[in-house]
Length: 246
Image (cartoon, rainbow, N blue to C red):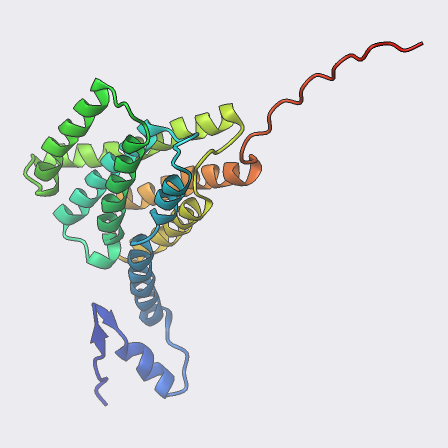
């Protein structure tokens, strides 16, 4: 008997439904690809709001206390390279779709940080204008393929260095300032799931390594948010010496 195909958004439910209709548990080769696709789309859906808590926290407190501007700028560059590379490789949307929403939110987040970091220096304006000039060409894939591979390999270092200034600032201040626990928790969880989906989708190993770096870096900041109080406790004032009484 021929199995009925039940496909939706690249997900094949026919194999699983066929096994369940016979009272059998689906085999690994049948179940894992479906789970991978479902998790991939779940990450894409969650990514539409992952940076929203961080943006709202800044707007609520009207402060960027404890935030490393360079970290968030490098994050924008990293997302741009990652998205451009996945588009260039023709990976399925479920394998990289979150980069679209993460990039949009990261740009909005940097704009908000700029707004509450007035006045902006000349170097900041130069970095912003340079990004606006280069990003469209990169996303269109209009660069040499060899250079593209080298650029994508470098984006792992970019994400690494995007987190290091923030991690160091947290350690130095013994406080995580306005960093959002929810945002970094979702980043951490998303990176863990993405390792599984990337392996299942047979994505390049460089893509998997990017997710592993995400686990390590986001996990470190998440642990700092849990360990360091907000705000950092001020040193206790020295006790005043009272007058001696007879």
